[in-house]
Amino acid sequence: MVDLFNSHNRWKKRGIAMVPTKFGIPFTIKLMNQAGALVHAYTDGTVLATHGGCRSGARFAYKNCSGCCISFQHPLSSVFISDTSTDKVPNSSPTAASSSSDMYGATVLDACEQIKARMEPIASRKELQLNC
Image 1 (spheres, one colour):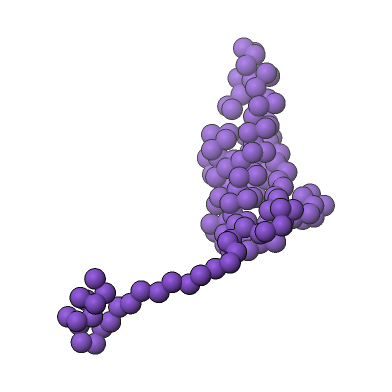
Image 2: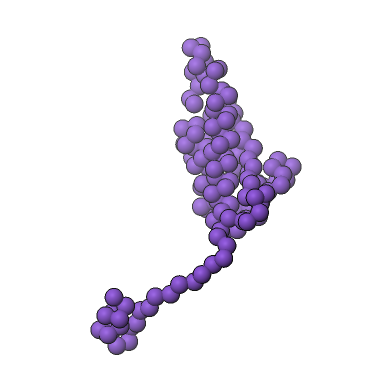
């Protein structure tokens, strides 16, 4: 297909390239592939999440917020992300490639699911109707 395209175009050319890599995106040392999160769910329905990753763009913040939104079924406007701080979440992994977005996004989601599971016995009572 490349040869056919190049034979029909005098000035514009295409090609195929391949770059071998030895290591993938995740770190090869297991302890560097860890992530932590601290999530607070308040009675007014707002959620505050703190994670160990450095903010590196809107995608990173959105992934962390969306984990809370999915778990608690709340709108994005009721979820807040706190600044990264080692007094809240220690031993954070380096932020590299997109691995931190995936690691911390999944960690926030897992923390929300754990809180939701702990609240379930209380929410199942008829006198308390929580939106969980």
